[in-house]
Image (tube, rainbow over all chains, first blue to last red; front, top):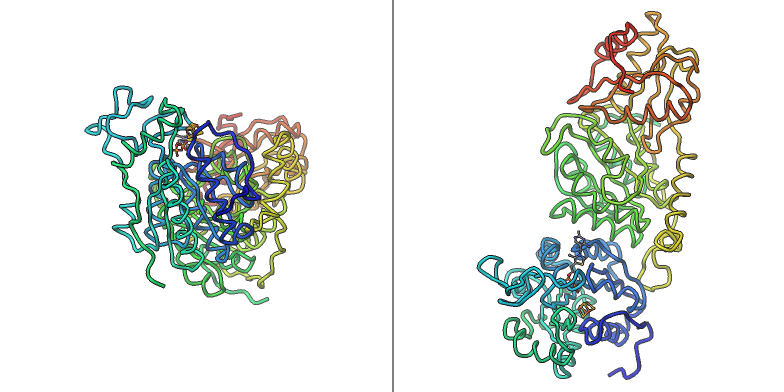
Length: 243
Length: 353
Ligand SMILES: Cc1ncc(C[n+]2csc(CCOP(=O)(O)OP(=O)(O)O)c2C)c(N)n1
Ligand code: SF4
């Protein structure tokens, strides 16, 4: 356990209680503990994940909305010994960038994709995402999401784990200490898989967005436990092959 | 050095490889596909990276990722693929990411056709993507120019930190000519590429153009490029009554037509831009101040480069009418160009500017 703040980590402009902050801290801790803090590049999605720009230390690059997996692919093929991580929201990776996300997984690119699923497009003010829960109210589903009209919540980790030959796929949550500890192990598994050249890894995080959920941070955490996790089970969908 | 027969699309990418290109990502589309096919075996052979991507958006983003990490990266496309590249061009310009785009133009809007054309002039020279940016745009008219321009492309892209476009044409990509292929060169080390250490980033220049005075910094770069990258071929400008302007294959054909007209006694001159951004405005300063007209010959449908001809004439105070021959699909023949020039000189054509 690193008690002190990772060296690179800086202050942020995220809303109080936002899951992004916890995830970014975990990520930076893992970089430090795995000894890759000065041997990694983060390809940033567009969304509240943009905030990582000022938070994470070291090399990063702001990609176009949805294209981070493709940018990360070009980075990894150019710098095969550097750890390449994309950091993207659910809208970025699973809606506008679904194509780039699935194709990178399909090719089993040796990159690590971190996605932050907060069940909405937070940055633009809380519109419906493909991850929005059934009946969830957003600014574009004001009466609650009608899945008959919009399609049902998308489960990208399961799609990838069940269909493509990749190294490691998991879903984590950061709503309580137990989940946070588990999440950190998952990030380490994903990054280690990449550094060992095992192939594509993805960790999705269930993350609270108190602002657009119109909840307090505590309510948001409770909501994740009671409503989000039942839809999006936490766990490992693709274990690393025994080394 | 010995000259050899090469096909355009293969010659251009072989020259790119010899100029240091070590990364390619692309998606097949006629008439640029041979570039992708050739590099699929050639790059691995010389230790480079080749990716057949899922589409043109992904390929230009892979090229972006490779370039920010220090590769000399290339993507190639035609027509509809070019539209999909535009988002990537805009982002690259914003971040000062220098890579090269080969556009083997096919004629037409929408799906267009597989025919040759110059209908992407506006798209490549005036932006295409959102925002306000410029790419350096080479306009080769022969196999040797294709080769020489591809060989130089990354040196220029890295010097100014901009995207370089090679504006080829279907016929140029498909035809064969003999060329002198240059030797391999070793690119200069980039002192700014992301290497994971967090120490270099993508450089102070990139930060500067995204910072407070960014617009000013970028504007200065564009002004420098305009000053330093004036390139054209000319003929008979000093005493010309009429000056023909054309680039690429129609430009090459027009040059022949102009020589023919001179032999027949017509006082006609020619400017063939070798770069279409920046536009060779300085060439117009050499034109006879009493010139009676400019004639733009191009394979667009409604006239694209003609607007730059008019602006260059205005800028250099050559106050003469500007005429347009828009050939559309394909490449005009020598006699077609000569006949059009004659009808302009006979007062049978209406000027567009
Ligand atoms: C091409 C393009 N379309 C739309 C946008 C506007 N936009 C910015 S962020 C965003 C949604 C982000 O949602 P998500 O990825 O879920 O991230 P979050 O903000 O929820 O963390 C949208 C639609 C954009 N930047 N670019
Ligand atoms: S809007 Fe939501 S996701 Fe964005 S910073 Fe605020 S709480 Fe976090």
